[in-house]
Image 1 (tube, one colour):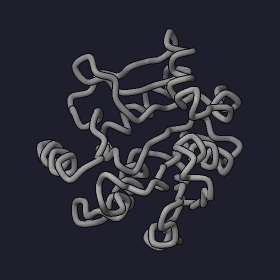
Image 2: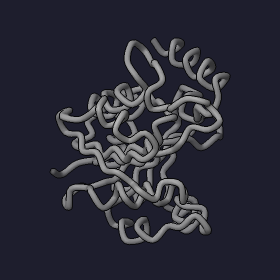
Image 3: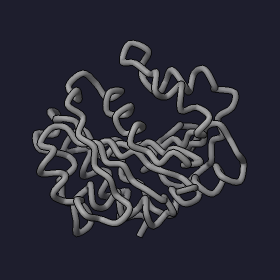
Image 4: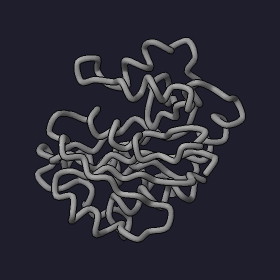
Length: 201
């Protein structure tokens, strides 16, 4: 399954939001379903969804979807790095690149598609979006970094450990939407993300 594989993180408890973020309404669907659709429209060949808190409810929304695998992370309370590693273990062995995205980071398919294209064409170690000087998400990692990705820890600040180590080898694609810098952690964040998303339509 050569191409870009995605790890979609949906295991958290969504404490600040007050309700499970993966199942929040988003553009006529739920956030988790929208994310999967955007990733697949952008050309991702497989999506590994990592669930934890209320995992069965999240899994029920995506189970049986083409190109989607769900993985339960029993250690999700120990931090996001445990979910990343759980997702990485389930990836196809011949994935060329690994896109890592949290469920609370909705991204337009066209931006994801551009990131994937430049990553594959440039053979970069790491590719990510940039909006007016601000780094955003998702990040796409070369498969060559898989051993390093598997060794990330909460103490080492997770993916920042990798991006700091390879900061000279990150390609940042300038994009036209501030949405790439948004995480939905509160109802206010949700309203702002919806506004920004509407502006792209």
